[in-house]
Amino acid sequence: MTLQAFLQVLASGLLMGLLYALIAVGLSLIFGLMDVVNFAHGEFLMVAMYATFGLWLATSLDPVVLMPAVTALMFVLGALAYFGVVRFAMRARTNVGMVQIFATFGLAVLIQGLAQFFFSPDYRSIPKSWLGGKTLDIAGVFLPLPQVFGGLISLLAFAGLYLLMDRTDFGKALEATREDQGAVALVGIDRNRVFALGWGLGVALVGLAGVVLAIFYYIHPHVGGPFALIAYVVVALGGFGSVFGALAAGLIVGVIEALAATVLPPAMKSIAVYLLYLGVVFVRPSGLFGRL
Amino acid sequence: MLPDDHATEGGRALLTVDRLTTAYRGLIAISEISISVARGEIVVVAGANGAGKSTLLKSIAGMEKPRDGAVSFLGKRIDTLPGHEITALGLAYVPENKRLFPRLTVADNLRLGSYLHRSKPDRDAPLETVFTLFPRLKERLGQRAGTLSGGEQQMLAISRALMTRPALLMLDEPSQGIMPKLVDEIFAAVQSIRKTGVTVLLVEQRLAESLDIADRAYVLQTGRLVLDGTAKEVRDHPDIRRVYLGM
Ligand SMILES: Nc1ncnc2c1ncn2[C@@H]1O[C@H](COP(=O)(O)OP(=O)(O)OP(=O)(O)O)[C@@H](O)[C@H]1O
Ligand SMILES: [Mg+2]
Image (cartoon, rainbow over all chains, first blue to last red; front, side, top):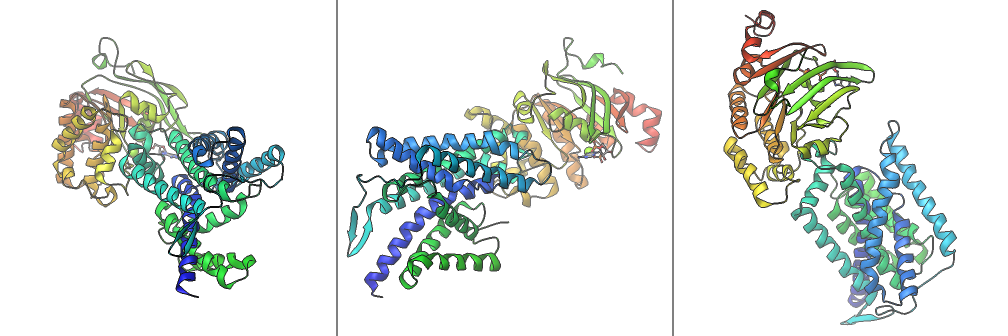
C-alpha cells in the first residue's frame, strides 16, 4: 500500500469512526445513566433518517438546515420513550433486566412495524443536497463532504457533551443520578425528569447522526440494524456508560473496518471489527474506559 | 399521646406526624407514631436498635411510603409527595448511610445541594455557613466524596443538606461510626445550625449527649412511642436513667 493509499484509508476510517461514535454515544449515555440497554437505538437512527427525508420532501430545505428541527424532534421522541415505556419497565419487581430488555426490544419492533406501514419497505434517498456527492481533495486524499460534515458535527457534539457534563447543573445531576438514583431526591432532584432528559439527549445525539447519514446513505426501515450493531460494539469497546470511551472506540472501529476492507472481501469487513470486539470482551470486559 | 403544647407555633407546628404507621412487606416497623416539632427546636428521637427511628425519618422524608397516618410540614400534607418535592419544600434529610455521591468531588456534592436554587446569593450564603461549621471541608473541595473519612463524610452529608436551605433538618445518627473527638464537633455543629434558624430533628443512640443539646425528646421502643417530654424530663425519668443512661 502506498502512503497515499494508506492515508486515504486512515482518513475515511477516522471520518466513519467519528460518525460511529456519534451513533453510539447516546446508547452509552443512557446505559450509564440507568443501566438500561436501549435495543431500539437503531430504530431511532432510522426514524431520524426518515424525518430528514420527509421534511426534505415537504420543505425542499437542505438536510443541513433541517438538522436542528430533526434533532429537537428526536429529543422529544426519546423523552416520550422514557415516559411511555421505560419508566414502567423500571418498576418491575422481579426479573428487572429481562423486563427492560424486552421493553426496549418491543419498542424497536413497534417502530419497525410503524416504519414499514407508513414509509413502505422501499429504498429512499435524498438525491440532491448541498453536500451530497461532493468531495474535498486534500493533497490527493479525497474526503466525501457529507462525511467531513458528519465528523465535524460529531466533534462538536462531543465538545458540547463535555461542557454539559462538566459545567452545568444538569450535567452534575446526570452524574449524581448515575451514581445513586435513590439519593438525588435528597437534593430535590426528580430522577424521572433526569431520566427523561437523558433519554431525550441520547436519542437526539443519534438523531444528529441520522441527519448526516440521510445525506449520503439509503433510507429503509431496516437501515438502523447494522449501525446499531456497530454501536453496541463501540459501547462495549469504549466501556459501557463511558461517553469518551465511545469516541475513542468509534475511531478505532472506523479505522479497523476501513483497513480490513482493503484486505478482506467487502462482505467480510465486519469480521475484523467483531474479532476485535470478542478480544475486548475476553481480555478487558469492562472496555477501554469502563468502570464496571 | 397528645401532641405537646410547647411544640406548637400559634397552634401549628413546623412538622406534625399524626399516628404514622409504616410496614415493610407487611411487617409493621412503626405503629401510630405522633410527634411534632416547632420552629427553632432541637428534638431528639431515641430508642434501641430496631426501634424504628430510621423508619420514622424515612417515612417523613418520602423515602418509605407510610401505610397509615399523616405528615404535615409547614401546614401542608406531605405524606403523599415524592421525596424530591419534600426536599423542595424545605425539609432536608441526612439518612443513616449518608447517600453521598462518592465519585463526585466534595465541591460537586455541595453544588448539587443547591440544585434547587438558581441565584448566586441563594447558593453562596449556605456555602459560607457550611465552611464556618466545617472548615476542613473547604480544604477538601477537590477530593472525591468517597475518599473522605467517616467523620468528614458525615460533615459533607450535613452540609449538602444545608445547601438546600431547609427549614427543618433531619439527621439520622450523625455520630455513628465516628471517632469521639469528631462526635463532639458534630453535636456542636447541630447547636450552631439551630442558631442559623434551622430546626433540627435528631435521631440518636447517644442519648446523654443528645439530651444535652435538645429541647425535647421522644423515645421509641419496638415501633411504638413510649415516652416524650422535655430533655430534662426524659433525662430524669427513672426508666431512661436505668436503661439508656446506665445510672
Ligand atoms: N428495608 C427494610 N426491609 C425490611 N425491614 C426493615 C427495613 N428497614 C428496617 N426494617 C425493620 O424495621 C424495624 C425498624 O428498623 P429501623 O431501621 O427503623 O430501626 P432503627 O431504630 O433505626 O435502628 P438502628 O438504631 O439500628 O438504626 C426493624 O425491625 C428492622 O429490621
Ligand atoms: Mg436507624
